[in-house]
Length: 338
View 1 (cartoon, rainbow, N blue to C red):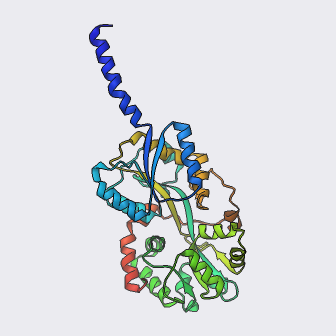
View 2 (view 1 turned 90 degrees about the vertical axis):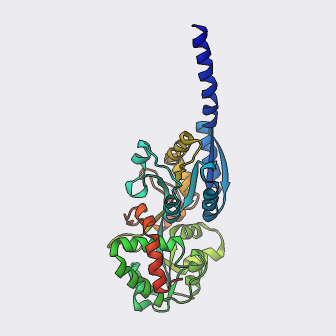
View 3 (view 1 turned 45 degrees about the vertical axis):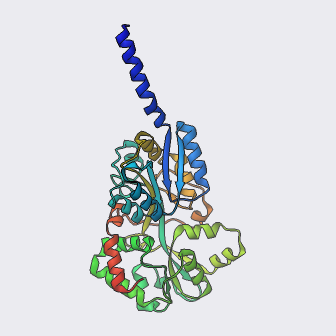
């Protein structure tokens, strides 16, 4: 080999090595805080040799950080819960399109967009007090606006992403006029002003402060798995209803992630997203928050979820849920759901 070719080969090697080294790490901004995620990350590193550098904080804090960092952000992946929050990141132009045959094959079309993907799902269910409400009167989300339930409904703030996403699904099915009528009927049925989180609503139903509430399924699965006497007592006093089983199905939301447009380790980022769709990762990811895997072939052995039984899920696309958030907020504001 000539001296020129040797020199060219050496130069190519020197310029390639730093790029290869860069791909051996991944910078993750995560709004998830579950112990089982540690096993998830260590397993990814074991399989790929890619080290994960992680920053954990609240969704809004991370989004603000990404905006401030701009093109110089070191983040490769933004991981969070709820379609509304992933949609907000997309709206800010933070995500890059991801082309992956594996992700398109493993993740159902309604649970992904061109730029972000769901990796676990949860349902928004109805909880009723066994002693004060006939379950037949609260079989659908629409039932919650029926005057039969006047003074019986507890719910958290209308501005919370969980409720905005629920409203987005109703808006997709029924249109603006009917959704606003529903929101006004719901507000008229409040037992008290919205306050607290979903667990607080469940406790209020069990205590008889209200007769019916809306809550995410994972809060209930967590309490069903609990060995605490107080949690067992709460669950003995309530009935869980899968809403809209004869029509649209129970509203579904997600935990998910996307690759950032300014990601310095794009190859590693795509590998991480694809890893989250693997069988083992799906179990880690979903069980971390008592949720369901999005890959249909993957099953978990979660006693809390099993105790809740099977159900028909709504098929509204997560991208639609994210896109309608602002419209739903205006509807809630007009209805007085603060």
